[in-house]
Image (cartoon, rainbow, N blue to C red):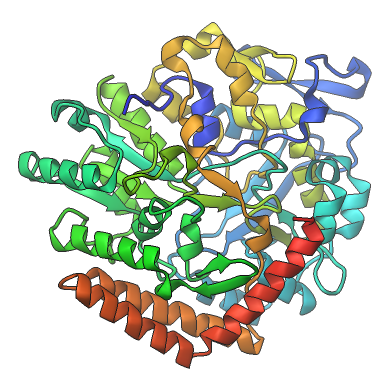
Length: 557
């Protein structure tokens, strides 16, 4: 388990947060545009960045203020932090101000209330299916004309991808987040508490048996530490079950176990019931055993993500796993290592069943089309300028500033591929100092595509600053674009079935976690499958299969 997360490397921020840029073809050199097309905006610390004087959205020329609501229970916008050079640059130099609206743990009800009162925020981050529905109802601004007018987003996303993003009425109702192009983008897996692992003799950790034995060692020696914990329970799944399922056999995609996603097993050209899959049943037995023996956190079903993050930051979790939890693990690692270089969290290759190759496991799929949408509502007074801001932030030059901070502060030059080269001031930063800077954090900052700038930059870092975390998370993922957006609209007959399926999955997973033995797990999953079938699960699988095959034809794979 000789793998460690980047300490001082800015690449770790990229990996743990937003990897912002446009097409790599746009960043093939480090030359600057002609001075006649830009003005220089000075920032603190001698830093400066370029603000084009001829941009049609007048970004950095006239103030732009807009409200933003993330339609997710767990997503609470962070307030503006004047201590962040990037946030300060965005507000003071680009004159962009975002008013975040918190969902307060009940996003669906809050959005419904806003819709009913016709008092929508200017921008909403939501699922594409929900955006298309709101667009059809006339609540959102169609963006087709803006995509044609502004060059960066269209070039970064690609014409073919934009065509796939069109709603049935031909309109595009949002700007996708986390679209990746052809670049692998991982954010999930397993993390080990470095200090505890070394104190226990650094035992072999490869198989699920190894993990089980290790967790018992933790339980015996550290009574105040949770042996293994996973992320907040939602979507009818304890995330650890999906991660264990992925390690049972090559070819399984762990997050397909999510009830709001595929919730099935692809076999040939069909989707088969998840609860009938032997590997999934075995995974659920293993997780139930961990819970039964008090190795898995006993508040797995009730703990909130903030509580989990606090345990991580204090080193009170020995093994941590989940989907999309890179940020939490990396943040805890930087904070702990800032106090003690021997403390923190290390990413490890996924645990597996004996005989399975760790390096061929797929813990999660990624989608070239992106995760969700940033949609502009018709309540926005300046919809085009909001779009222009997203487009402006997508250019290689500006995305560099938004992720690394202004040029002249912690970087002065770039590589031939456009990756900022860390300067001495950056290399002197301690992990906790780097964490406080929040170079890549800003409410509703546009999230364009990934490029491996961090890999190019790595050659300029010392050995202990190399980001080798990416070797694990980015090589335990697969392109599963054809399986995204296969869920039915909420107002369709299959949409009602989908909601019932999520409810049944939530109850079944909870019961299985508390099963008294393996036989009880089998009985609970069998009953769950019966309940699903009565709710119309077969019709839902048929619908999803048809959508999946449509995408196969569209994407040519």
